[in-house]
Length: 310
Image (cartoon, rainbow, N blue to C red; front, side, top):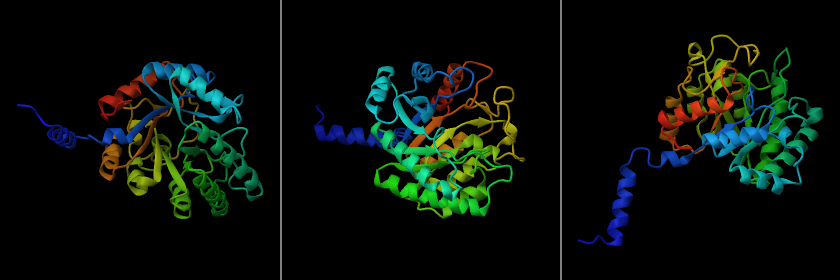
């Protein structure tokens, strides 16, 4: 007995709906940040090629690696990426850009530099900009600092939205923007449709915050996760603030599945709310094995434990 086209399509749809996580996997896009100390930090093209050999198709990097292309040779950079077989998740800010968001006298330069970067990554097909703040002062970040940071972030967020690019701030240990008080201050005082968040599971944990709880609190305002594992004893948030370590002698971050971050719980909540966005593997250093080997370990964890395909 032949099956009609309508019956075939109906049965296919029902089978798809019945399959566990049928749509969830397609909502997640997996990438890797490749400036890993221990072999990748000084050769961005090697890092891209080896990441691709492992199976990653999406890479994240920093603007200082691409000074020969910035900002009028985006087509040439895209061609080089196509030859390797990867595309950008995003390109982050950094030297020589102005990143002192807390200083109102530098806001014009902060805004100018970041809008220039936004227009550049737009040409490369990126959909969001992830930014870090400047280096943290020994005295920390004051409410006055945060007020000025909010003003600059809000202005860039508004202009970035007009360009069709999501603007996302990354909480990072040892920067102006690292702890829960600072995260809540900025998120509460900026437009949720103009200023988004990058949740780095490693830095969030080191700041004493539970990344699972923060995922639930911020939800769809998160556009990207930096997937880092940390020491098992720091599960749910470090008990004391970690001072900046030597990343090669005392690495605080590990390949996924080799530490204490509860990635399945994070993904479970993301599945529940229908979240869409980037899961970007990041390992600041790989002192015990080549970065390529660490990247492969994280890939296997993502595929076998989280059930996602690169």
